Image: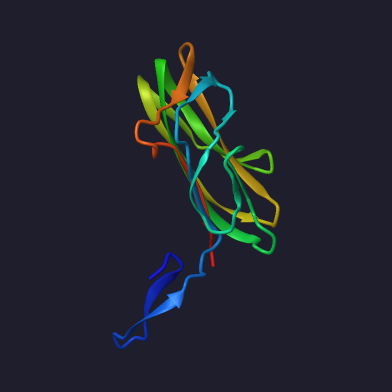
Length: 165
């Protein structure tokens, strides 16, 4: 079995192998080190700098961007989460999804009590055409100073998605 195969059944319990192909492109990137200097109430682009999986060479780890490959337009499920910590008090924030430079999803969180850390998530289905690109931006509300992306295990900050078939 390789990474490009999966098991299927003929309905009577007989198993065989089939080539993977549904729901591609598939990608997931992560941030493999802290990203510092998230300014108060400023949308800061998150640079997801390491590929976990990228079936169609559609990610750019220098920019943290996913770009739809040629011939792969359609509906995509996209998701992301970041873990943020601050020496100041975090009052809330958002993890915003941008398509071609414009915000399309930006769920907001306000904490009832100030926190020293928080997790911000976003997800959605976008209709994307070839060469459209998607990026994530964090906008954190802190009492003073800046916030940083926590990265104690390398999987605290993730951006991924796949084409819906």
